[in-house]
Image 1 (cartoon, helix red, strand yellow):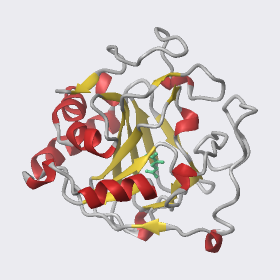
Image 2: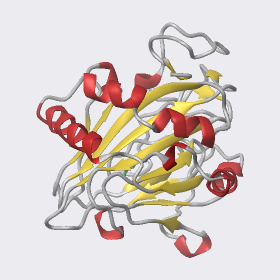
Image 3: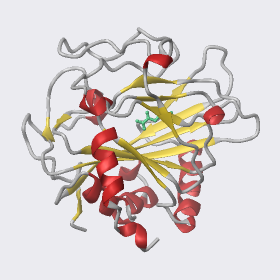
Image 4: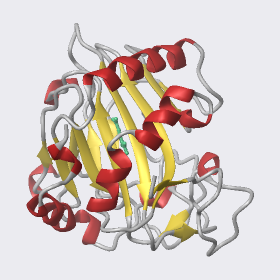
Length: 273
Ligand SMILES: O=C(O)CCC(=O)C(=O)O
């Protein structure tokens, strides 16, 4: 764990170029244990931003939730004091790190729901370049259990894709249309046209990816294993609030105006610690 506090320059450069890297064993067993308990508590009694996604044939269960840290001391402690803010400051090459929010994605075994291809930043009421997510595996994750797939370098396309609901039916956006966004091409149909990358993960491994990197995931087709993923999103020095249309209403702030620095109780500074 100690050596992980300093990421290699090669990894940081890969993040800069590809907009995605995998970080092995960046969450300790101790954290995994308490996070697992907190996840079960959230599934049993979800916080206010719960969203369940249904598959076409009603099979399985896809539990999602947002902003868990605001209601749960374990998630809060993790987002503030785990290694993640320290890793974020290195990957984003930023002096300061704000917590944007955290999010849970649990695909129970035999849950065929894909997570549609998308990039994240169009959903978020912020602008700036220094934006990243860690997606932490709480179970072994493989291609057939819903490993994330990414298009390396897509964070540099300069393309912002129109947000859509993660529900099953594509094209039924619950999001306000932003005329500056473009529709997401059907990447799933044209997979061979893209240099897709993915990694299997062990519990405690994480993907770290830029806010504009295009990604998606398959269903959890394993009959015996869950796929619990916990994502934590952080921002750096150059990020400010953005009131443009098309973002997720649950991720906006009533106390910020366009161009404001994020620093606040809602988007706390977590680095320097
Ligand atoms: O867990 C998933 O399937 C999707 C995760 C994702 O899209 C994200 O963390 O931005």
